[in-house]
Image (cartoon, rainbow, N blue to C red; front, side, top):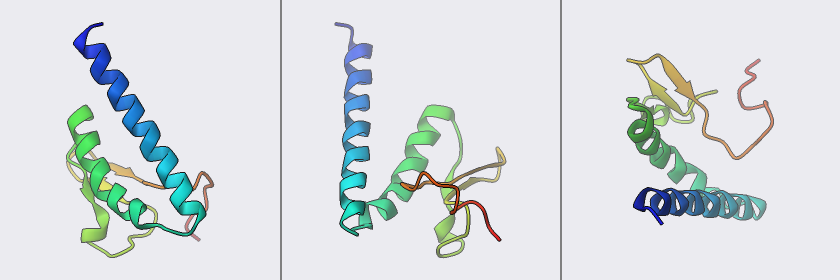
Amino acid sequence: MLNKEIYLKEVAKSLALLSNEVTILNAINLYDINIVAEDFFPGLLNLIYGYQLKNANYLEKNAPAIDLYDEVNKIAIQVTSDSSSKKINIQ
């Protein structure tokens, strides 16, 4: 097996575990992992895509609609475990 394949499978397994853990913890009203994810995903996405994402909560606590922003590339990302659109539809 090639090293690249080994690494990709390990990343996939780790992301699947993270997804499952978020689902389980959220089901019992434990949301700390969601806050940690808002600091984890900018680094991951910056590494993969070359973005310059930052956590919007450092600008404004509980910033509405977005969690990550990149002023240079004009990108905003919502990090959420909620699959509905209620967090991004601001009234």
